[in-house]
Length: 96
Image (cartoon, rainbow, N blue to C red; front, side, top):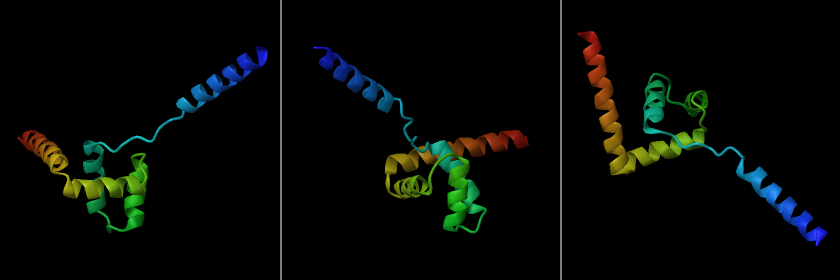
């Protein structure tokens, strides 16, 4: 019976330890637009994209996958368009 309790405790401790592992976060549309604006100002090379993605805490692979999704996913295109319009309106209001 003691062995069973010890094994159960060890399994429980392992599960808790593994569940506390930080997960990779997904790119938000806001972060993607910030990164995209910086990428446009560079030479558009993979090295530049990777440096900018790392600056925001993402990998190049995450950026490229989101970039591809932004080209094909209609709902995501709509979200990005709305954010761009809001940013443009804010900039115009600041100029006044």
